[in-house]
Image (cartoon, rainbow, N blue to C red; front, side):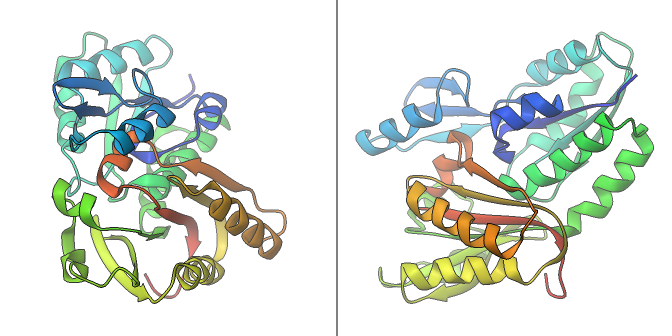
Length: 282
């Protein structure tokens, strides 16, 4: 039987790609006021950003229940005896812990391996997609697990922010708290290092910040995936994707939009580049 891959919606995998590769995505809960929405199920990306712009209520997120994870495992176990669950970093949410505990709630007999990607957003997504391709090609579970573990330190992301207020309010600011209080003309570049938000640079204009993202991706070799995603600036994302496509001929540049589960913490005007590949510096 083919190994099946499960992940959470913080990976921002484009829905068409998830369907093509047979990836099961468990939606994170997004809460506006007293209303609980399932990311991408009860609340589309477009609806979320409309609410974010109009609402005075600050959105929050919580991981799905143990029961929801267990139900997803049981449903997938109807098709296979081997499941790999790849979660976002345990330093960013409780998804990993919940995914591990949910195995005890399963009704089906099935091997379920849970692995922490130590990442999120499209860096997590690229790890998951690589695992799903290997599974689709017939790789065995242990071989796929080896590939995932090898890919975790090879997955990197950088994001240009318009504001850090959402990260601050959501408690996900991590080591980037040193950037709080910067003048508005400075565009901070953040990423993920060792599983948490980390500050990498501060550029003096949006244009220079976008150049930084291009130069960041340009520093990789042995590339197995590149993703460009935005929140509310599709024009910037498309232009950056075109520049990268011209640089990396023959590579697929995946385009994604930051979903509600991530958008609740990063706010508008975030533009990000994720790369799965080899690099001299982390």
